[in-house]
Image 1 (cartoon, protein in one colour):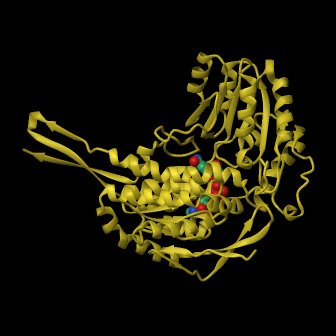
Image 2 (cartoon, rainbow, N blue to C red):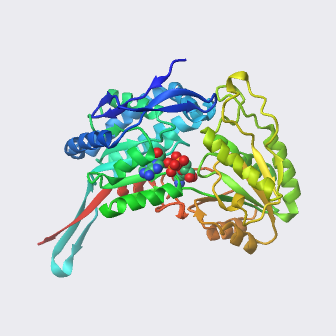
Image 3 (tube, helix red, strand yellow):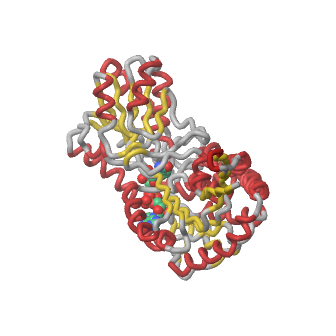
Length: 481
Ligand code: NAD
């Protein structure tokens, strides 16, 4: 198959870049796309286009902006299969997962935000004592810089684009250099849907060059970033001299707490999913399992049995549960944690069996679901984000003990709790340091509810409405009567 050449999308037009970088198909290890290796020059052009488009788009009534976004959603939905195949090729996830989750949720993002903003009201208040009347108006901030990661390329990108543009901002976005193809294809839809040129611009390339040029650009007053905690520190430093508005959604080290009285059957099914879906490359994936001593052995045996059954292989093939990890380097990093387990004398219960891959996938970045026990809480396996199909299981005795141990990391993104006792569910959920706690479930997402990390997992917990507010300035006008 010939290599795809991705182009930047600036002012409604696809344009070439001076340099290109390689994008690999994780399932074969082959270069399948050339991505613009954009520089400050390309970012400058994109910011300039976004600035020029801002007066028109911000003055367009929200009802009209909403109509364009609904059209984008319809067009994306009509090309669901094409986008699912591209996303799988770009990121390594199974096609079925992109088809049933990632792309439908990207469509939903456009629809949800497009309609959510229609019901927003301004505030008002009469000050009787001084006979003055206050009211607020809401305005977009300006050109928004959006920087997204590779693990859920379409879902996370559209989760930023949709609130930014419904609020009337224009955008310069940089998807991950490892997964840029779907964003480039999405740009075709923008033109067909009638989105005015310059409202959304895509500049592809590396973080320290293209990404940082967006963050440092004085014409970009607001930046929304999803990615690693270490990258976020660099972003904060780069943005600091400009006092920019920043939203940071970062990494996690999510605990699952399983009590003796949990519904074991449901718990195992969901915890297998929460540990290994998308190759364990979801920021919300469970990576530390604390299991109460009474069911510890039963749980570990059953969990390992189920993990061994998961089919790893060609993301296009029927029945495959896990595809390939994003890159050679990331695979080496994740496997490095298994080496640490070995050095520390932990037990690796599964994950190192033969992969039995088809010839086409021999050079792909595959790894089997890996389960590790006999790990100390202080081990790097229990404190660092691995971001792959590796889960550690440890026993616990009391509720207070498990809360303390689960909270003893720098991250606070998500957690799960499993018990059939409703009081335990509430008590423990309330005490875990995590932006979202799922009790007897996982990844049940209501966009109306706040989402985001505590501690080093992020800066804000935003509902869809809050996200629109993030991209909005609210001004108070006080009129003396
Ligand atoms: P990353 O931090 O390496 O990169 C994220 C994005 O930032 C990419 O587009 C990258 O090119 C860009 N970037 C890198 N350096 C930059 C710089 N100096 N200036 C500006 N931009 C820069 O993260 P990743 O490896 O792509 O993604 C995985 C991470 O994302 C994990 O830590 C995961 O937990 C996190 N994540 C968090 C959430 C959430 O909602 N909290 C969701 C998904 C992923």
